[in-house]
Length: 440
Image 1 (cartoon, rainbow, N blue to C red):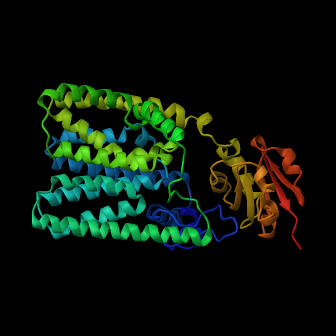
Image 2: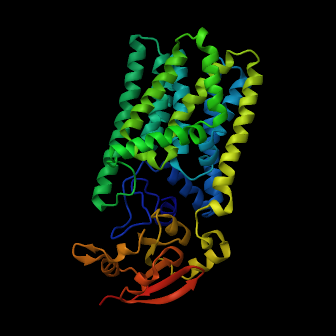
Image 3: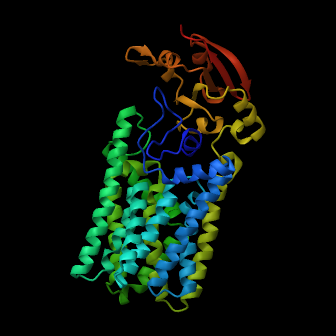
């Protein structure tokens, strides 16, 4: 999407994707502020993977700053607050995704700033603070609406009086109205082009699938990725140790409301959690906030916090680096990893040619690396399947598709050779490029 803003215009109201099929590529999505900002940088510095990673890391750093400031507002000692913000970084999911090109990182940082200003507003009412809190909440909700859970939980810090009710009502109406308006617009944009690429709706799954997803999330994702074993064990230890002196206060209520709100989102959107652990990101600040609040009441709090941080750092690196960042775990074709071969593959495809490419389970990765646009397929059988009584490959041909790009390593070549009207144009590594005959 960022590439398309750079190449085809910066209209943020018309986000475009590469898998365009018979359309111009415009589709409804979350509010593409993250992608638009990245596109602006691309315009000046060029398109490089490293730029996207640095961009995400800078945005995430703002989130760490916001979280630190939140802890300071809550009378946490500076060094403990600093460790608390680093625990956010060394959460396994965020350790990985904070360096990835994904809008959730921007949404998290904006939501944390919104929370900071709402807590500040609860302590001292100022119009400027209200405006900043609302602005950051709107941005977070527009990018990914589930991140509104974070500022929403701040309601527990407000005293019940007329002025607070007015302030919170104004912020709620402004935030929800703008977020709802955007997503209504996005759904209409999707319907217009029938490009259902983004998760703006929940797909139905069976009760058995829901149960399996819940079990996997609870037994595998939670201890390994969502929390991390060291922090999870520390949380259990701290809860047990603090049980006798437990007092229900606004901090406990904040964590409880946040987690219950997330649980409601989880129940409604459980289909998303089947394969996408990053949907848990909006829950993580509440877990770390709870840990810091429990740590501050312990003797030698700084020492305990430092030990937990050290163990969490070791776990995050041990969990993520071997499984995600070693070369044989990239889940990419060798041709995309080797820059020389990738350059040959890109140059072998005439620029601005509409293509069909596969077999790509993601529907977007092959386009991204080859810098192409058009159709993609997961399984080669899709090309001969009928659509409105016509083989889909013939529809593509009539739509001015010029080249078929095939990863021979994961595609049945017999079925490729059975296609009519194609001839081998080039072959680079395991990829073959086929030219389509023109339709008269």
